Image 1 (cartoon, rainbow, N blue to C red):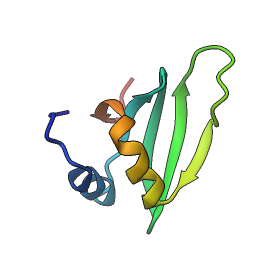
Image 2: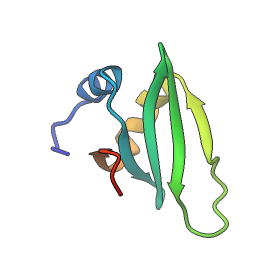
Image 3: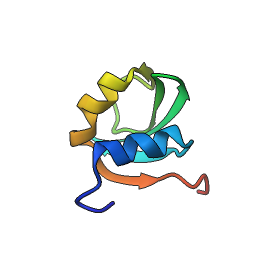
Image 4: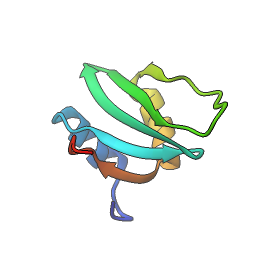
Length: 80
């Protein structure tokens, strides 16, 4: 993603139905919107003995808090 990709742009893309992959603390996640103010965060890859949840439901407030720490943010096109 571009350096000037803002949270507002990210939020609009989530609202439009896009799914994103990103890294957070050496773990790979995917995030997408379920319903209004409800986002699903799924752990895709993690090192052995990872203490993080495999699935979590977040509000927009939590997604906004997490956004600055998302690394290698990219659109998930569903192929792999």
